[in-house]
Length: 171
Image (cartoon, rainbow, N blue to C red):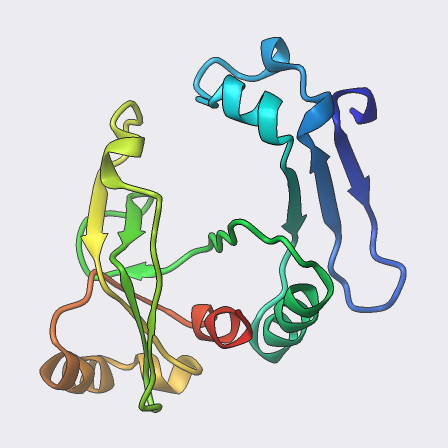
């Protein structure tokens, strides 16, 4: 709850995006699930604030992340988590993005540094896959023929998703 730094907020603007702010200065490390690994010294020293947005996608995600980056001076990290269609593995597996993000239909390759590594998930029962992700702009682009075309043009991918490009453009 709030006494431990967790502050949930329901949307009242009509955007249908709830959010949570986690103030790590009030984080009770002893109440965390044992599988959550945190650097207690770093969190105690830096006291980062975590913003969790529920559900923005497409142009809405682009607008929100753009305005957030304009308004907040000292953003240290942005993590985008979501679902993707994996070209390898099974449902429930984890896909870890390599250090490039390719946007279909544009001439952009967005370089990024991904601090999340495959070995971060060594203690989980899920299989983990590492590689590039193909981002498409909508479901018509997710047909097998189109995916095969993109793989011929751009190389191999571990998965397909439809929203990451909007976040990357905004960042």
